Length: 238
Image 1: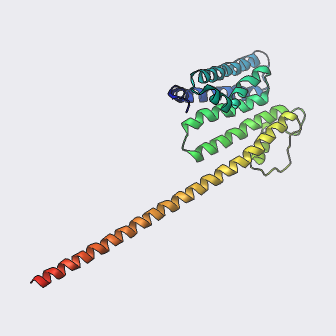
Image 2 (image 1 turned 60 degrees about the vertical axis):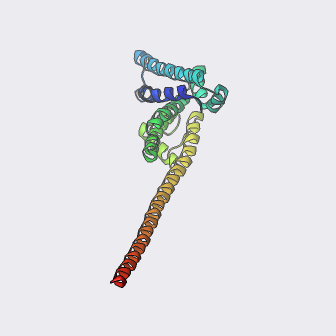
Image 3 (image 1 turned 120 degrees about the horizontal axis):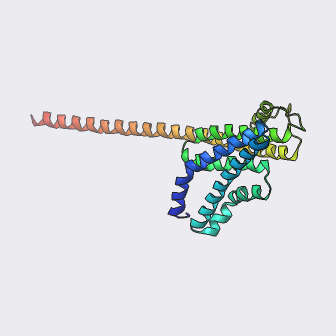
């Protein structure tokens, strides 16, 4: 839809973007879990912003080389928000969204067609990243005091169970919770649709096999009838 140049660029950037996002994720996680200070914090921040520069270059390049530029632009507003919002203000919540979006774009192309594998991998990644984001927001003010608590909370939230033993109290934590609730409903829909598609495919295969078998039986009947006719003709000729 947007031209061969953009398609080639997207294919070429699948692995680089995925690796960059993973490096970004590692620096983000280390900064939160280790509570880095001093030169280590500066180094982690430098890695994060360097990775962000890669995302900015990728977005700008796609915008320049795409055909139907305005159509591409308004259909990729989330990409623009991911690039611009953290530059206006380095919100950790925006980092959380960026990691998910960039890894999904890169790994999504690599795992295209492997729906179940991609769904499981994305779910685990979202749980871990959401746990990091809510732990960072809540550990000093809420009842989510450890990363383990945060991962448990993210797991029960995305599965829509919600025991209520841990809960966010800050605006950032609640924003993550809203995203996980929506993501949980979407996840259930994807799993259901995948299972239904698999069942339909199996039934279709069995139906095709059954139809093929019936055709074969019918052809055999015709051949047997033809053989009988030929035998009868030969017997009459004698």
